[in-house]
Amino acid sequence: MVDEYLQNHTYTRLGGKADFYVTPETYEQVQAIVELSIREHIPFTLLGNGSNLIVKDGGIRGIVLNLGRLASIHREGMQIVAQSGARIIDASQYALSHSLTGLEFACGIPGSVGGALFMNAGAYGGEIKDVLESAVVVDAEGNLLKLSADDLDLEYRSSNIPEKGYIVLEATFSMEDGKYEDIKAVMDDLTFKRESKQPLEYPSCGSVFKRPPGYFAGKLIQDSKLQGKQIGGAQVSLKHAGFIINLDGASATEYIHLIHFVQDTVKEKFGVTLEREVKIIGEDPIK
Image 1 (cartoon, helix red, strand yellow):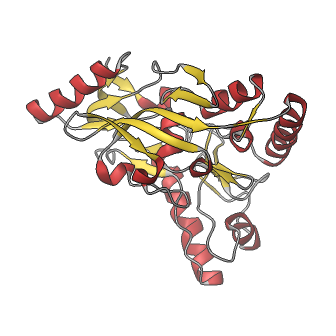
Image 2 (cartoon, helix red, strand yellow):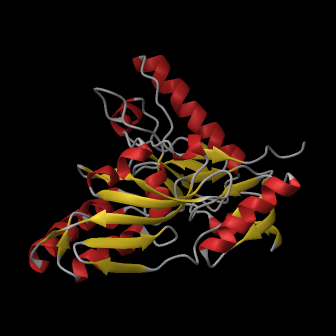
Image 3 (cartoon, one colour):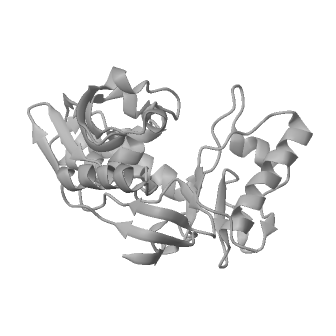
């Protein structure tokens, strides 16, 4: 698709146009797109499923790649193999259906499998590096590689995937046998906690900030009296201070300005620097 509005493909409902919006269906097509971008000097950007992401109002130049059509999940013995475009929530549900334990923590994480590896996603005491065995990626030259979890340098909310220019195509998770009822009880409890505490009724990028050492980002924001603070249509959630919601037709510019305002205020009041968990990409709007 040409000149596709990315606000149609992000959880925040923010973002200008992509020059070219591409949704490959095979690993070979992904390799071909990378090779084309190299040969023709066309920039390309991997969008993921747009959950932990803010796209600026000026959109993205070149090719935007969405792997949502690569979404199969299957079992191989005590392992689950999930393609990168599948939702990590669906991988967690698939594990439950096979009475396999290890992915319960991911039952409420809104991102794709590829995005979960990209940022070593985690929640409620678990994270991707706890269960990841290996990954299939395309490197910056278009080569198909199989890497071990150790090769990805998974740390708190980070990996070497962006630095290396990898595109994740597939992940293999090592699981353990469990009881369906026990796994479901844990997932039901985590789902209740998430739904009762997070403003899921509004578009948002999820948790905006990483947890600073020795603190909780949401508590710092709450203690800074910032809940309800609004810039344009973007608002610091009244339900959970760690979330910024698109309350009323916000622009990406307004959303980003509110993030900076929160960071500046918390720094001034408590001397703590809030580091963004959400990724911001794209071009500023032409003035």
